[in-house]
Image (cartoon, rainbow, N blue to C red):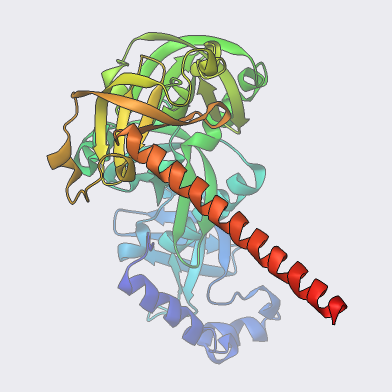
Length: 419
């Protein structure tokens, strides 16, 4: 992402490269300095010089360099990315970048704009190396994040680099609603860390989350995996619920950790501002993962006392899928009736066969407590017996065939001996 200088700036940078090839000794000022033995003080194009303001107006600023050289800053080169060049007075020390060695007036052509630009990027590099937390002004937003300004340089704060407090959690992940939420931050100052500050590509990327993590480090260190917490639900999403607890901390209870039974939509069971207890199951940086089902006994632990293979049970169809039916046997135990176990006939459209909410009588055909799996069937039990009988008869026929073959081999051996 390019942020900062435009086409004219790119041209001027190439102009720097070309003018650097000019030998200052060929200029009138260079010849004069060389004759006076002051050649060692003469600068090059692109150098940042420090001098004193000897005249200042809204149109131009004249700068003296040790009584040897005089330079001028004028036009658009007065405008810069650093506030230090505003409201200059005679006698002020100031830095400027050399644009040209000698203009039509025989003066150094200087720029505050480039000096400010260079200094701003050096400042940002320093912030990054020091891992310093700095203020970022939010100027605008797009669907990917926030457009910011740090040290008068434009940059970007991605959505993924927002802390839990500012991360936009929108039901269904509607990008337009996410953008609406992000736009509410415009005009605010966020505390950020510098992730990337590349002057050459004009790329500045910052993280509000990293700054928050550092601030919360001592608080996070108070918690360990296995700790129990009580908090308030701040958001309910398709994949789980977010819970705020402790000192402005937030954790996620994934949908698979909300309850032992199958949950299709957390919104059916949980609401924002609802109080909830949970156990910390993982801490990864600032990310805290929680489980509420761990605080309840696993209903599958003693399921064999309640259900057995071959039992007939009533169940409510809670969801139809292309591969079968999800069935609620009780509030804790759900089972699956695979499409192959629904009918003797081929089912082309399962929704035509059965609808959610229907109560049917199923037979338990498999039970795996450790895997939390229970298989159901609607097929007649007789069919299963026929299959078993067929298998038994097949085994019997195989045995008889083997016995016949063995007897035949024995007869052949006896006949050989007799001969």
